[in-house]
Length: 442
Image (cartoon, rainbow, N blue to C red; front, top):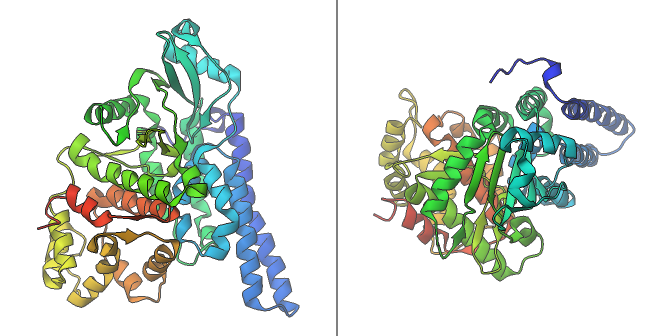
């Protein structure tokens, strides 16, 4: 993909989004100047700083909530970390973040028809017994229509926005230019690596052919499963994917108003699906935001959107389980040796065994016991511990590497913890991890 295309390649709706994105740093600068004036006028600096933080977040989430493309993709990725934000900041904007997970303005019917004609042919209407121009859901690079297929089955028709590629790149490039403003939300919040990863995944996520292959692979591996439903792919051509339609309550709804039983049930299945994918399907679902999951009326978890996957044909790396076990057993020197062999510890870096255990053991806390209660408080404490530049954990973390092989696995683990904390779930997480990661149980 050519990332240097001109403005003429980007649709008008994408250009208007860029104008909205450009307004963000200007708004922050304006509020900063007002804040400075208030401080000069005698108002306490802490109160002014809190007001600035809240107003910045309010504008940030409002603008991101109106956007598609890279901004919405970024917003979805950021939303799974909402549980790590301070409660007094997160609470007023939780609804806005949830909205990012499954809502966006629709594209015009004329554009919908063009995508369908290019993908399914000029006679595309003949493929459907019923068609509705109004989308049932929207995502970062496409939208979904509920329809009836030619054989009578209800289907989900996923269409990619025209010009989604250039618009996605343009949005992410612009977000990267003022990434520092996101630190206003939470000290130590560095979104640059997240934006970089999203840019690197763009080409693959735009390829609906690859997505269809991954979804078929999952559907075959989980066919008839007692816990999960993976909708079958019926057709894929161009920028159109047709799959079975499966109803269910969105995970975002369970986060918002689900009973404790529903929260725990959904959370356990959510964790089980992510953990079991590598051994059962040779794939890791790499986009664990709540908009991709539904709870079916029969209790099974419906899993959607396979545009981002980590291909692990041999399952999780064989070193993961043994290394985790060594850390849980407090064998620091052996942990350092294993981390160095995997590329986490640079060859020339001297690391204290107790320091490395202090760094990794709290992250393994959910695995250490038979059940674990994932709470926002726990995640906020962990986020502060590894993000505060003054903390020993943060200082050590800056010296360590994250090998490319582990990058997506790390992101999925972090994102899944965020969702589990949003669910406020208490589940047997340790036994589930030991079930699916060989060598962890010994």
